[in-house]
Image (tube, rainbow, N blue to C red; front, side, top):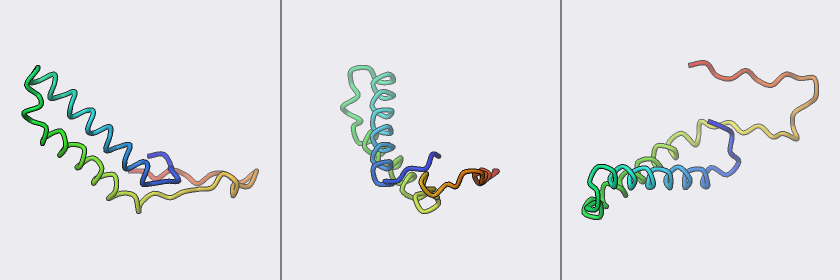
Length: 79
């Protein structure tokens, strides 16, 4: 993930992406009857936001102003 200063905004953005993805998927699968399964769409957005919020504490934010010229950036974490 990219470092994001405001974690709450990122959680909300991931939630919105989950809602849109859930809605488009249901519209594709069920055609015009997707409103009957609106709970699934809400659950998709909620789970996406919950998952993103769960990893908010694992995000390290590096200030660009704190970077010193000539000092290499820290290596990314390997899986």
